[in-house]
Image: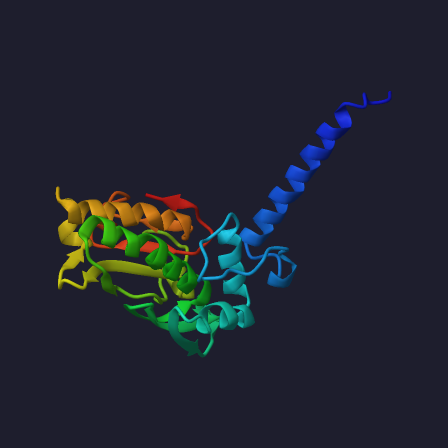
Length: 235
């Protein structure tokens, strides 16, 4: 039986959506080599666009792209860290030492290059403007509990994203007026510092695949866990 002509555009649209969805999932799970992702490379100096998650994923997969986009960026102070071949589910292949993002001291090493790019975007597009608008100050440093740790997710048999150096636990923000805003002390407050921390925590969801704050559970009462793993949790 011949299909009505009006159905063909519907079939075409459905096929296009299906192909794009599958392609997106393949890129999300690092199953497509970056040169074939058919998306432009990330530019840290420009506002992020529609495909920012895919663009960050491409950086994690491609050391050459990491060099061009992150290490060579005028916004970044960083250098390459030698690879540590994976053993027992732990190790990294494309990591850097991230010294600073603009005027914000980070001192994170080793950190997966895509995760470093996500952190730079968060600090530039969320943390910095929020500090200026809500606190009338600028951010000079973040304090974190580390990036790489060869361990499992607590209470599970699965390796943490920290085992790939693709996560960072942010504990505090230091500002130019000398304030040190800690997640542990200031998250549950009622003032502008608490509002600031809640605002920047919400802003993590744009760049990280898992972004966990004290709102998630008691284990995160003193830090934001930010990672570029396969999950999709933001709370």
